[in-house]
Length: 338
Ligand code: PEP
Ligand code: MN
Image 1 (cartoon, protein in one colour):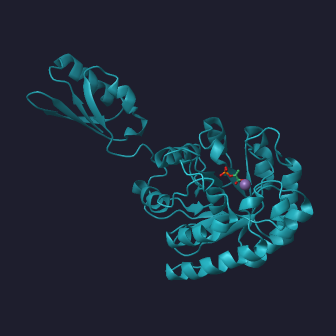
Image 2 (tube, helix red, strand yellow):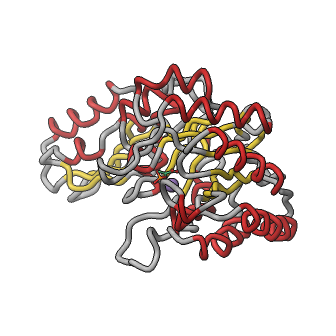
């Protein structure tokens, strides 16, 4: 962190600033100029609040040199983290993992049938929402515990690990018992009490990017979970809000190389919620694999026209299989397998 003080700052104020940083275990190097003084603050500055530093009336400018996250930072953990989800590995240089399944679990036979199709197409995991974050309070809110138990039966029938969204702390025990990969949805990306609670869980976490969050805010949310002790975090880009109405969201594929550069954690792409339209899912899946994504999470439904949620963006099983086959070809081009 580099700080400069205003012209004419009294010596006593300079000493106070230095003492403040030293009290936090940081070392300070002072460069005295004729008009300005510049301080280099060295050490673990993740706990320093630069806005607070800038609030000092004698401080002219504050520049953060290092990132405010530590556990997620590639700088302190060079190797790619591979997250093990009940035996399915996500991350690393070799394999790409495809997760498929309905937006909402509707009943046992629906989710078992879709799970079998996902598996037959080459999917490695099953998704399904039992607690649904719906924009309207009058829309279907999910089957709750019954939906989780339907997913468990689909896992028993296929062997596929299950992914489902956790919306509140009171369901943590249920998820700890039944779910293999705990999804934190876009709308909860900055629900800090929930992130802290998930940080104490013993299950890996799929952290979706918020609707209007920067990459740094997203990484800081991963840091919340990791700071609690749960270091098995997978990022999931699902599109962000822009001015564009032709797609539900705007898929930001640039996050793939950026997340890989800044962090050591895996990243997967959700082309279904990103586009909101099944017609665009294939193209965005291929692009994501080409750009280095570690996996995809795609909505699949056996009867999209009658789906209880997100039918318009859901692939039928035969289309899902085609998308996986094409993605496999792209994966081979970029030196990976699927
Ligand atoms: C979902 O995956 O079902 C979902 C609601 O996604 P998001 O949080 O990305 O909107
Ligand atoms: Mn959905």
